[in-house]
Image (cartoon, rainbow, N blue to C red; front, side):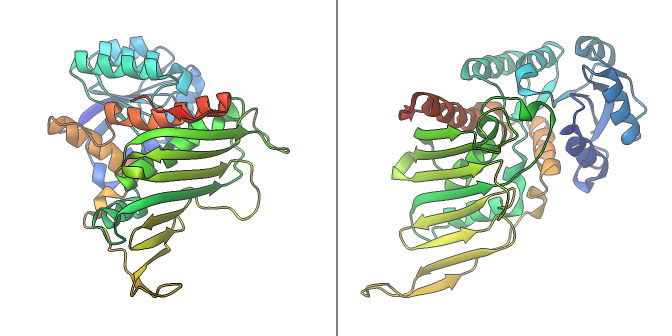
Length: 343
């Protein structure tokens, strides 16, 4: 079946969506873009020309939905506009796939989840970094018990991108716009539930962001697992990958992942020494490579869930937990106190 879709929000992020829909074999003939909407109508028209789309382009989402009657709404608008766009999509009978973060408050997130349930529509979030090979391989590796019971997860994220646009003006830019990817990946790979956090946020000297380009956080997960995060979006020199650099510690060994191709897992080979002997273990390849294609995989998962009458992996009711981690970290940084995570 081919699904018709309107894409709302034609800024830079829309390119990844449209490129996946146009070129990913996984999505071949599954989605037909029938309209583009943006408050800047010229930007929508430019994006249509860029991707060879002969479709209506406009500034009014309600008009587009009522006229074109799409099956799907792809929500790529800035976070502050998300709730209005999502609720409008449900009003017109669309299943909605949203950019992250799913909301700017837990109250708005709950409102959207309830609206999706009332409408009988699927609402999911593009947590595309769940759908990369390293994250999927590590989740399976940890679940296998290869390094014993997980005790802690540690993550470093240091880059220096110059986006321009809304990101350089928004508050809590690292935590709200980027760290949600990392927090969601940590929650997924660890298979644990976030419970509390203590966080610190700053905007270092030399930052070209208005607020919150650097953050540190200590999360308490279920089963006594600790997750630590250190990050900056204004750290020139010695960059990590966009997927961050990770260390997973278990009762029988540890795994280091550079966020790209390098996995270094070692487990106990013997005990009784001051420093016990270790042996390397392999992190097995993925059994389902089509689950590791980023945007294409998360969009495919969304439409496959619609067809299968099931909840997609990144359904908003689950993604709520990742948003709660972000908002609790922001609250902790504001109050300089440990904050329980509201789920």
